[in-house]
Image 1 (cartoon, one colour):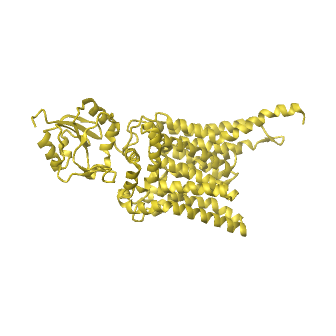
Image 2: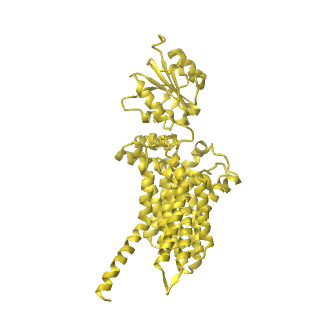
Image 3: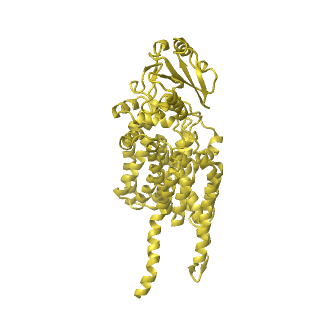
Length: 521
């Protein structure tokens, strides 16, 4: 080949080399941008407040708490504890690990699709589709374990594919570690093993003799290591499951058949994914990989649905978030199948560049349609209280208290059977450092109680402190906040501080001030 020919072809080689990393890098950067956009607009909701109040405890206090409650989230709390020790506990600092984890999940989604289905177009489109799912965007901006679990399962799937192709320790070890992280961070994610079985089965079918035995041995050894690492969390979680998950009802067949709509966060996006998945399964090409991806997406959901008919239900959209990389891969395969169908038009034995451009435009158009379908919901998940199941205006309550605070003021919040609302720590998070009202009606603080919640005072009249003013926060909107309290707490407040003043409904909560100095008490 002449030197001139080598020079002419070198740009082509450079483009091809750049296209390799772009398959996973472009989706990761898009996901990073989507996750970081307006990261602090939604206020923390009660689950995120639980993450903050747990992770910012001294490590010994945190470990003692996990022996009594929330062990299933313990791995995440410990990791977040180390993170906040380095980077602080601002909203950005608390949520940034989830943004990074979802970016990693987008990258692994693209890599898995490229390796299983083949083709850079399918891989890149799968990663981009993953970044456009509204529920992915929402949990990329949440200080909870779901993004970490999603990334760990997506990584484990890719490492498993590599281990099946080249069964060496350098692939089995990261696969086992990724599954252990996923399981320890959220036990429900171990149902991903049901879907991964669909990846292992074809390799076992094609492998015979000693090679099959070696493959089974390495797989069994890896899974045994995962069980050993996750077992302590599983045992503690089982003891605490009634308290943690008792509010979840057994799922119905209707919920199973329509699980995709809440899982994606937008029915239109789910329907677009279904259409793209149908392309992958119908168009000629590589239906085998598409079927395996379908099993990877559906079997964990089915397994969790069946398991939820036992003593404890686990069937909840955010618990199954880790299945979305498989759905994105399947949809990406649909785009890849469409691209392949277009580019099979050949001229003189070679694919026409014009036809290839048409195929790329078609792929970009399919991704764009998905993005347009997701856009309205993407805006919704960034509203001020979009993350909360009900309005939880901790930020607004804290702003009003800080504006009228006097040293020595107290704060009364829902306790006992309403402590799940996390009003006390939620408001405290948003209060300035120099605004620290003393707590009323607490016999023992949450840290001392080794729990998420404080222990209520059995005789409220003895737990009103020495101050003359109290800020009272109750759930719901009410013109008379004392009626929302237990009778003994209401009587203690009225006897000590008089009737509420400055009553301010804030949607999901009502803030009022009880000022004993005005009544001479």
